[in-house]
Length: 444
Ligand SMILES: Nc1ncnc2c1ncn2[C@@H]1O[C@H](COP(=O)(O)OP(=O)(O)OP(=O)(O)O)[C@@H](O)[C@H]1O
Image (cartoon, rainbow, N blue to C red):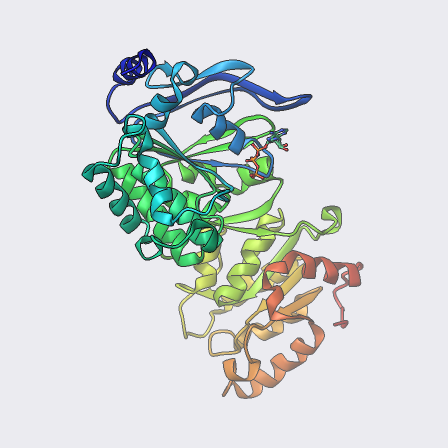
């Protein structure tokens, strides 16, 4: 054993067993004149899965590279379990931290198994052959990433997504207490995205500390314990996904118009972002939505995200639109399903329509519950309608009421169904085409 190896081994034993803590303390870094990170401090606790999120160019990769020791901060330091990463030999640091880079292109043509086996190098002394334990670790990593069937293929002859899983396998075979992943799901199809993040989650549950830059906020919220938003050179927000993935944070850090609703299946935050292509000063202040289902729910969410005051109803309790509205803090005018509206309910609906600058009919159904509502539409200054399926099917058997509704349909500005989530744009178009918004509006 050389002196250098002995020094490395001493440092390795100082680092201690897993799990470990990662800390960045007052880190600043500039590339020439471009300041990328300024005074960034954060601590990642042992066994935590932390996601770095933020707009393009915010410094997520740069911070990961600071943590891995590939870059040195101009000011500040990064420590892993109290040891400055720059005091570690490259071998010692490779036994502590594995990295899956954003660009997984490799400049050689080795078989996949050999690439994964490279993850074992930090565990062996130079020039020694792989041990049975090394072989086992490699096979386990191939299995866990479902790349065993690729093991004999040359790395430069597999797809980008397959290569990404192989590079993750190499990092797993490295058996480090800390893993740094830069966009680990970027080239993966939807099944492999979920599979990969569940695998990472398992690695975390086994005690590893994982930090990953992730663009997909829904996936980040679903799998990470904690999210750190990087923006404008610093940590803009740091906390549990539910505290970080909010429309306010997205507006402030990503300059995004977005609505955040609970995913109906996972219960975690789901982000729906929209184009910001309207002149906000010309938008109506208040819009009433009449309708049901995901069409009405989507319109409500979209308008609310644009800062418009939105009302909804009457809508049957339990309807998807009512649920969507409530999840973003809007109280709909709710009624019993399949029952005639009371005169009070019709009056309330009339008030909401009158008070709104624009009324949106979103998959409005002319049924027992809603036919008494039709006269209320006369109160509307400006109608927009969206139908995401055949009107005839939805309203089959509605008889005379249906004929009456047809006249309102004709008056309404029709928008194609694919634009349900462009509700702001269409409402904007309507208010532009009808600036006076007079009570006797007959345009359409
Ligand atoms: N080696 C480099 N030399 C000069 N500038 C660099 C270098 N690496 C990154 N930058 C710049 O630093 C800034 C941060 O880049 P970084 O890759 O860390 O951002 P990111 O948040 O990971 O972005 P993305 O989401 O697009 O992957 C960018 O403006 C980028 O152009």
